[in-house]
Amino acid sequence: MTNPHPPPHPHPHPPPPYEPGHSLLTGRHAVITAAAGAGIGGATARRLLEEGADVVVSDAHARRLKETEAELGAAYGPERVAALPCDVTDEAQVAALFGLAEERHGRLDIVVNNAGLGGTTDLVDMTDAEWDKVLDVTLGGTFRCTRAALRRMKAAGHGGVIVNNASVVGWRAQKGQSHYAAAKAGVMALTRCAALEAADFGVRVNAVAPSLAMHPHLVKVTTPELLQELTAREAFGRYAEPWEVANTIVFLASGYSSYLTGEVISVSSQHA
Image 1 (cartoon, rainbow, N blue to C red):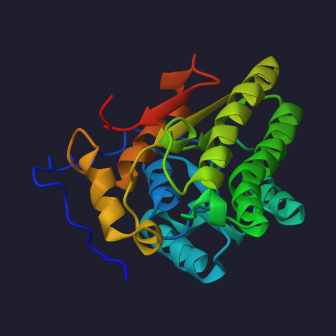
Image 2 (cartoon, rainbow, N blue to C red):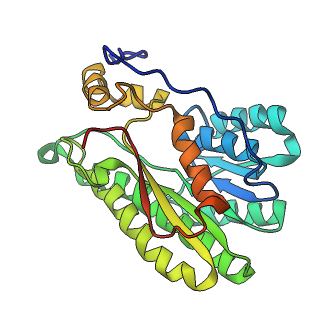
């Protein structure tokens, strides 16, 4: 049974104070996948709203998504938040999500591809079904949403930004993560190739690669021992808060990163 409150590193450095919004994204319109709940997607939706953007949030979990929509609407104004359940492995649902964004806001400026699926299974025990599911959600879903976004951004002709959520395991080996690591390495490669193509019509495509950002889902699928081991690898002696990853996503979505495309930024304090 997993521990809902994994023990911190013996000498942790606490996270810094939460940074207030600075109106970096005023007037922008965004889509964020896997945005229900308390993970990176939900934190990103809040940060984008705090920076002035309107958002369309999606998630495969309809009940949690409805709760998130209500919470964000109450905090930032219901006119600034829309939601639609979306399974990123289903092309029709992806098309419906981006159609809602265009219908609601008339344009699409920012897309954050956060949807992904992990798990821990040694390769010798991994089934085809396990491999296929992780690859289809994590890499295939990013592909489908990136394609949908680029088609609309190219046709609109006003540029845009796409930020994909990768992972440091796309670079660094970890036991039991062959499917997830392969998918996240694929997200990095997809980001670089899409960026070269999208530059022709003024769209930037980048990615973040978090190391360890704590959220409830991670606790459910990871043992306390592994969480403690991963936390100990971090230079600050603690895991990242989801909003710390969201801050980097905001940077990539904003004009402060206007000359960055095809880049994968590691959001990590792991030892070199």
